[in-house]
Amino acid sequence: MGTAHGNTLENLMMNPTLADLIGGIQSVTLGDEEAKRRGTQKSILERMSPPTFNIVVEIQDWDKVAIHPDVGEAVDAILRGQPVATETRWLDEAGEVRIEKEELVTATKKATKGKPLAKEN
Image 1 (cartoon, helix red, strand yellow):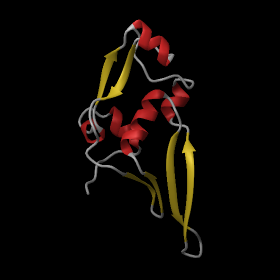
Image 2 (cartoon, helix red, strand yellow):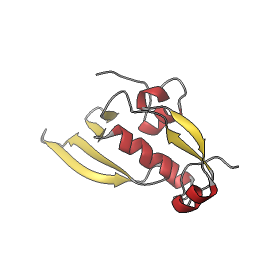
Image 3 (cartoon, helix red, strand yellow):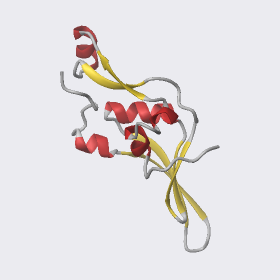
Image 4 (cartoon, helix red, strand yellow):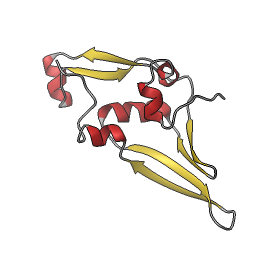
């Protein structure tokens, strides 16, 4: 168990000091055929290694958390501009725990209009 200061999983990914906790991010140049097969640019960002932790819990509010049950999958999805599966848990007015599973559209996906996060050649 550990803690890292960031608001979201994406914040950790873009923070050079903390990115190693989620596997690190590196720029990779793909060959023409591979880029065409993936439907992406030749230069993309990929996770370098397995994350330090299997699960990330984002504390969104005093009584609300978002859980990423597979950090590696979540990071890879964000880098590809795909939705990220999360589980949100919160306390309702009666003090009962509520759980909602959803696929979130990340800020990265919104910013790239659904295209993978990549660097221009």
